[in-house]
Image: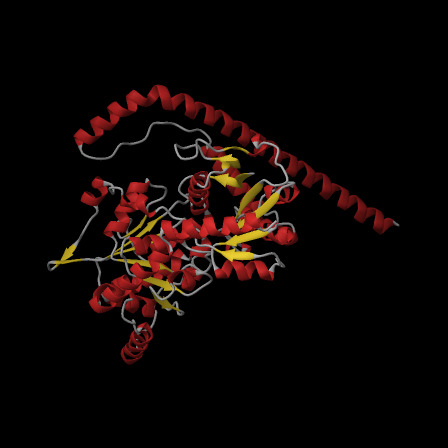
Length: 136
Length: 365
């Protein structure tokens, strides 16, 4: 069996040293890291987020295998050759995915129009109710 | 009499999957007809013999069905309906609170997992729990049947394989005045209960105070669109770390994981929920000193073989990390204790315990 390790004692020494030196955690806390999760996990509708995301998907639904290549000249030539060799495999997959994305985006645009129409209709009905209540 | 194992998801590489596959071999060696049945099987060389749950032959009254429990799934309820002897292997369920604001789906799955385990409280004959912590969890859920504790069965001989040569060769070892900087490691999937951010904060202070060229490796799977990972990535950048300084490996091959174990100077675990924590046993296997936060089953698994802390102050942790890599006496002591502790998890010891438990259960009719 190994000798007793006095971890407790080491920890007290560490605490003492930190206190003596007056060291504090002067840094960004993870709690302060706010990645906007509202777009992903949402329990209520926000028109601005909806419009912003709709705009985003309308711009990015189409996928292409073309990417600007980085590296030295030899590396770029090599990457170009690889890209040409893989076109036959990658492009049909990307085309299928783009088709699927396009359908989804169309669907979302339709939903957006539907929401707009419903909004207008509800507004109109609210107005009528208000008028009728005034009269009645 | 036949002994089958069932679980919702089977894949080689995760702790529950590996445990299931290892037990299958053991049960077969004991001379019983056996098989693994799962709803979702990640196909690999190791899982090729596993079959779908609906392919399970009709069970007789004296057959034994071992169900591995670790998550929320409809299968948890179906398990209760089998007309045979039922054994539960409980690996724990991550509390849903950890996934709040990060992953609604996982939060719901874990919620369901807790509901399911309470439902099974009076529907199983015998339970094998990975740790005393898991056992007490089950008691709190209302389990009154016999519960025995058995560590997860790990085939440590697999870790003797050769590590990835290229990674060993190319992993940057920066030198500062002839001194090679230290590498800290944590293995395990990127998940909010594992608290990778606490390791990163401590590492930030460590670099600031002791070793500006040190490295931190998180070897474990993540989904790039996972919100928790997104936050970690943002935090990493905000603290000024490059990908070389703090590396999230994502899914990597087994021999690459082995490389990181070979390269690491210390293993850091700040997890706040573990039913056993296999990576701790893995670090012991590689004689890497462990700094761990004392929560759930962590202290029990280490059983005095690690530098166990109950404080997550990054400056304090940075000092502990420094001690761990520079205090040779401490390292020697911790490694010696790890070697002792590892004997309790050896394949021979745990497999013998399993055989004894199973025999005892079979004889109690």
